[in-house]
Image 1 (cartoon, rainbow, N blue to C red):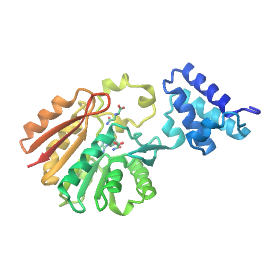
Image 2 (image 1 turned 135 degrees about the vertical axis):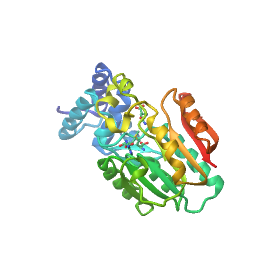
Image 3 (image 1 turned 120 degrees about the horizontal axis):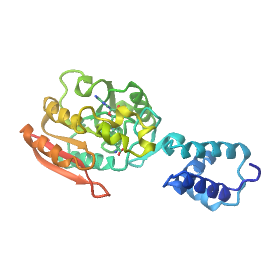
Image 4 (image 1 turned 30 degrees about the horizontal axis):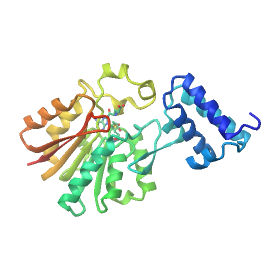
Length: 288
Ligand code: SAM
Ligand code: GLN
């Protein structure tokens, strides 16, 4: 494409993506172009008449085509912001979601209120490392054990801990939930955003999620809250008295998860937090 201007490229990409059914067409078009031109949003938008180099135009067209086929924008640009930190992502990790920030905020509030010095925190199913790394960054001195069943996800999490400058505060362990950990650990806080989608629900999920994000990060075996159940039952062996357990949940799971916590008989101060769409997204409880 010769003499393609920024403004025209954005218009083309937006209408191409809209025609392909991508709702976030305009935003995605901007994010992809920003990445290719290595420019921020302001620079892209205020230079509509600037001509794009031919090689950049070719890369842009290819990226927009991939986006139109459903590939998530974050995988195309290779990063996603979470808690105002930049995380590297690839198809081996779930793209961190804004609603997961509520879980991190709850944990930060809890630690600040208690004033715990260098707390021990467990992040189960760390994926890109989003939860554990954000905590280590915003609550200096936190020691985080971050686990995942997926070694490929842990590779990404290690890179993020290094890039964000907190790698000396994190330990990464591969394995199934608590079995990944060395013996004898007791935590001040256990957090998890576990897979919580049933095999049936997966079929109806947005294709950008269903066909591109790792199934191991999305789908819970047996029933959608099976990981919550296991975590609630196994966590007491790994918590200090008064420790916080915090988990993310899917739409409509709050009543069942709350009952599991009540029935376990060793948790109090059960608290549920809504996300910006009014969905109960996070549940926390203290171990007594
Ligand atoms: N914590 C990240 C976040 O919030 O963006 C990723 C959450 S993703 C929904 C769930 C993560 O749990 C995935 O990284 C997946 O590999 C991991 N996982 C799945 N089954 C697991 C298991 N049995 N034990 C430990 N981790 C598991
Ligand atoms: N929040 C993700 C979604 O809606 C699912 C993440 C999870 O299963 N923990 O696609």
